[in-house]
Every structure is written in structure tokens, then in C-alpha cells.
Figure 1 (tube, chains in turn cyan, orange):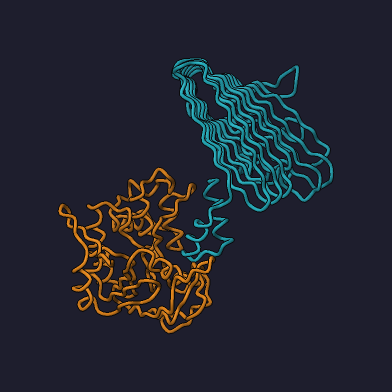
Figure 2 (cartoon, rainbow over the protein chains, first blue to last red):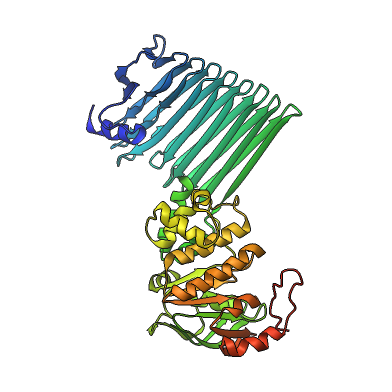
Length: 305
Length: 242
């Protein structure tokens, strides 16, 4: 493991020399480390690159880390990881990807993650994406997440990308059975000429299912972001999505929320707000002694916290 | 001590709002600026805090000319300003906002003490978001706590009672009385509530952009209080300047 990998692992997965629990490290398209525990088995796939992660029913408080790193150009890594989470298991899964580039070539990672949660399983899923290095080539990260929640299962997903990734396309699809709950928190900051696209599609099929999608984004410089969400209610269920974006410099944001209620007891809400930082917010912080630049930085920091 | 000397200010559309305003706000006391709506009170407060730049005149804080200083520099020079309309911040907790006001991190105890001075329980409010989930009265009280956190040489409050319910209004008066007793700096409140005028040491009446009257509260209050009707229920009374 070289120093670039170590730094990326620290940024995306909080690595400080070792991982606790089950883990796998993927480096430039190869699995460099793999460790299973009694409760959690990581098995390399035979047909395609990636892992099957089996989490036994009733597992409590364990952690699985599966970060991926691309440390140089001319790498186009595609990986398929499937998580099978047993009934009643409660685990934290840390994915995330770091791409480092010193040259003009493309460096890309695309992780296709599928989650199959059995009844009453509870997963906290964190994915952080970073891009580093001075290279002029494109750092590209395109995560695909597919979520299947059986009765009463809960998945909390936190997705973070705070600068450095030139192109990102996030696709997340979920299907919820009765009483299942999906919570997604997304925070994205783009700058320079970066582009980030997010697409959510959540389908609630069972009574009492609920989905809550909250996206906070900041588009600086000449960057561009596009947010699309579709929440479909086919049963008595509740759905909420919220997309708030701050524009700074010449940043641009598109937001296209869509709600489809196919049952009279489906209650779906969407909120969206895009705009630059309100002048009165800057002024208030200036009366605390902050400069205009400091005030803007604190507001963005708080917004993405 | 704050000295405002011959300050004038015109709105961008050319309307003259302040005309040759001069006044003094002494240290260790409470000065209330009052007067009819549209008379220039809020504009004067903004000019003092550096949110607006006067077209002519000078402003001195403790003998130092601060006329050319912007809002940031005035805050650093020792001026605090509680806005009439509190500002909401989606991303900040109440604690974070008070820390930004104080200029340093605050312990839980410090946050609780600050909030208790405006009648809010720190345990309940410190981690609340400064967004639309707070009521108008709650955010107004936090706005006031932000100024208290700064312990400035001059604290300016623009209509602190606006949006505050009757019950809290009594406590607000007590809080200002307490501040006046223990504070070395100067307090300046913009208000036309008779109860606030009653706790003032000095009163300045501004109308049509000019200082109409200025002097000790004991002298000016009896005349001002003659006008205006109080509510028969709560006896809250606004001074009537018509």
C-alpha cells in the first residue's frame, strides 16, 4: 500500500493504520486486502469483479469497510459488490472512493453496490468520494446503488462529495416493502469545472413504508450540478424529499423532483430551494466581526455539515 | 461612549432619511431612541453599526473616528447590533451561532447561561437549528442573546420587543435593567414601547430624519407618556407621536 493509497483511505474511510471488523481494500482495480469475521463473510465473485458480503442474521454492532482507491491515470475500474444482510442484523457499512491523479489521463471508479436487507435489518451506509492530485485528466466517480428493503428493514445512507471530483454520476434506486424505512442524506460541493449528477428513484410498495431524501449542495466556480428524484408511492406510505442548493460564483444547479402517488393513502412531499447566500446572512455574521469571505465560508460549512 | 456628529443619509432613490443627526450615547447607561415609524430610527442604527454609510457626518466610538470603518471593522472596534428582523441560518445550530457571535467556542454552561438570559432553556435550544423550525419570538430572543454574547463597548438593539410575546416582554425589560446595572459599555435601544422608555437613562426622539428632543429620561418621559393609549388588559403602551 503506497502513501497515496493510505491518504485516500484515511479521507474516505477514516483509516488510521488498520480497520476494525470485516474489510476489503480495492486499489487500482485489484483487491489488495480482504478480511472476514465470524459474522461477516467477504467472498470474491467468480463471474465479475467484486465481492459478495454476507452478514449473518442477528449480527450486532459490527462494521464492514470496503473502500476503493485509484492512485494514477489510465485506470477505469468497475466493481460489483452485493451485500446480503440477514434478518435483524444491525451493521455499519463504510464504502467510499478516492481518486488521485497527477497526469492528463482519465482515472475512473464506478462501484455498483446492491443491498438486500432481510426483515428488520438495520444498516448505516456511508460513502464518501474524494478527488486529489494536480493532474489535468478527469477524476470520475460513478456510484450505482440498488437497495432492496424487506418488511421493517431500515437503511440510512450518507453520501458525501466535497470537491475534487471532476465528473460524478450517482444513481440510487430503492424498493421498500411494508414498514421499511429509507433515509438518505447527500452533501455535495463542486467547484472549478466539476459536474455532479444525482438520480434517485424510490418505490414504496408496502403499507407504512417511508422514505426521506435530503440533498444539500453547493455549486461554486463554473461547476454544474443536476438533481433528479422520483418517489413513487404504491401503498399507504410517506415520502419526503428536500433539495437545497447554494450558488456561488458562476455555479449552476438543476433540480427536478418528481412525485408519483398511486395510492390514495400515499403522502408525498417535496421541497426545493436554490439560490445564492442571502445578503442578510453575510451581514449578520459581519456584525460579529467576520469578513465577507469568512462569513461565506462559515455559512457553506454549516450548510454542508 | 458613542458620538454621532451631523450625520445625513439618503436612500438609493434619493429620499433623504437622516438629516444632520447629532447625538451622544454615554457609557454605563441605557439610551433609547424613539419616534414615529418611518422617522429614521432603524436607518440610524444601521449607520451606527456600519450596515449603511452616511453621506456626510462623523461617528466616534470612545474618541476614535470610526466613520470610514465597514460593518466588520465596526464589530471588531466594539459595536454589536441586534437586527429588528432576526436572520435565519439553515446550517447553524443555536450554539454555533452564539459561538460565532462570541468569537470563540462556548461550553455547554456558557451557552445555557446566555440563553437563560433571554428566557430559553439551553438544554432544549443549544442544538436546535437556526432555521424556520424556530418561531419568530424564539429567533428574536436568540438574536438578542447573540449580542449579549459579544460583551461589546456599544450594544444596539433595534426594536427588541418586536415579535416577543407579552409574558417574555416583562422578562426582557428585567434583562435590560440587569444589563444596565452590570455593564460598563453603552446600551442603545430603538423602541417606542413606553415600558422600555421607563427604564432609559437618556431618550432621543427622532422624527422626519431629525433629532427632535434629546435629554434625561426623567425630564422627557412625562411629556412623551402623556400621549398614546395603553391596552386595558395588559397595559402595554406604545407612545403615540402623532
